[in-house]
Length: 50
Image (cartoon, rainbow, N blue to C red; front, side):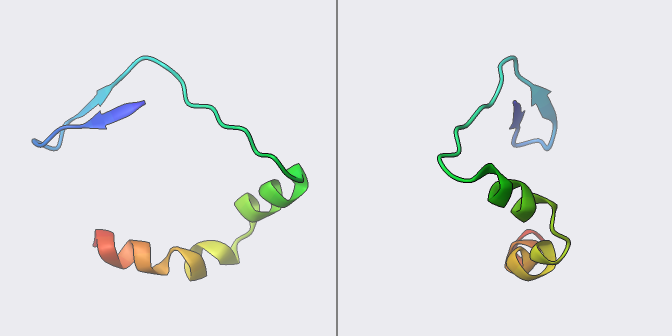
């Protein structure tokens, strides 16, 4: 886990992150590995960050 400070520095925190996906794991894997979804689905996220 990482916490971002107001000064722009990062602090690594102890712990872990886990989640449960109640569905077909093949769909989750396919959606995470596809190459086109990043450019189409996250287009607006990139514009907000930049």
